[in-house]
Length: 376
Image 1: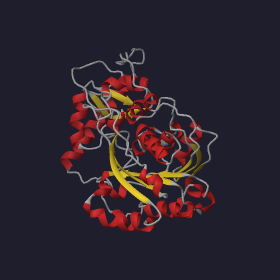
Image 2: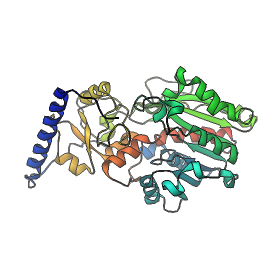
Image 3: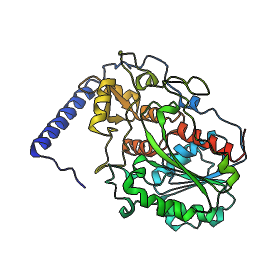
Image 4: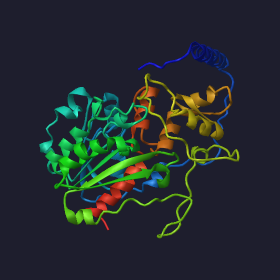
């Protein structure tokens, strides 16, 4: 659906666009000017939040794999990757760029899960995936079961055919709204009742070292009662307070994680918007009007994300705030610097914003492995 704007708003946006184009042209005409990077401190390496663990003997496969957040988290937690299914070709290119030896089935021909018979994957121990969240998000109009993007039925069908020892599914917290109680019960829980013990819980990315305020709901199911009895939700590793197990690490904040100089204020970044959502593809990650204040307080510009840091520095916004590159967005989502993304800028931030934060996936993967008796 198109935006409904008043003529005054249209004139304002048009003037801003023209002014931006003029500034960019002026900057391009000053190619001899050297632009100094504002980065001063050490940047966060999200790989440090996910120490690579030895192989645990468990195999896994993914549905709706997106940019690879769940797959990467499970790999670093010691799982053996078997297969990934993803409808978007560009996501398949990202997987092949990073893991050319993986079995990745992407595109309308190979990645459409509605056409897959999953019984051939019966030997897989764990199935994980993030069914499209738009049917349950505010940005996606929360049409639920009436939204053609709803793929929960296909995820459940996969579980029924593969019969893995465990499954993990991730989605927006809006799925737990009371209006979707019937959907969760009849579409997710009832078809697996008696076959799996299912747990559902919320996790916040900033509780696991990710410098972003991002909350998601997880469904974890176990086929064997003994495995379900050993299940324990992931405990926060970062925060302001301690736990029964000792003090937590301090939260990673946006400016410090990006290596920006201190301005006397820092906090976790707002939730990054996916470039694949909304009425048109954009190169901005602004998720809401409320989040704009946080970005402004952080002096980070959430619009016009650039391909490289050099380009971001070369085209500073009018307010002088720090312009983000795709690498910066990936860092704020918890992706290590060596995980590269294919595609145009809007496709890259689309993959990043749609992904499960890898350190959160890693935390869930570790707890599932413990419940399955694969690790102590």
